[in-house]
Image (cartoon, rainbow, N blue to C red; front, side):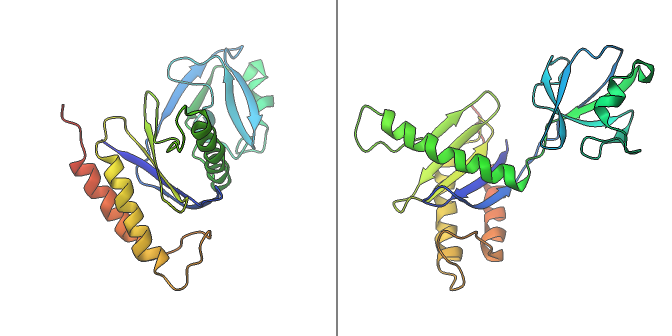
Length: 217
């Protein structure tokens, strides 16, 4: 089982800490003939699959390499634009490698900020007053677990669906936050957390949880 990542959001919804614990590398390489039967477009200086997913290549995957050469943004090693290269029939057959994009710091900040309104909407949709908001979001490949403190700080953990005892883990992370961040005289509330003791103890906690928190049913 695996714990993928941890996010800590301030009470105003800003990202104040993020840690990637386990990452899964997803890459698919395939040879294509002309014309290319998948649709690509440029997004944030990346070449992204927009339509025509097949053979493990999914919408949203990034083009990583062409004929074994890694891309530099949207350009080949010789400076030629990828879109122009792929539009030329004489360059086929061509080997293309696709993979799941690694989120940039700005993208993580943006995604974290999007959780805040979702949490508020979930609370308002509840037929009962004083709803706790979102506690678990479940997809086919992961679960997102959320724990909100009385002061409005949100702790999010993304883990494999079968990872057990994540609710307890979130509270243990909160204890580490209280011990090593809040008690740090140099830390200011609502500001990014930069504390070596917090991070080292967090890494140890997550490793212990992965070993013990497995569903064997």
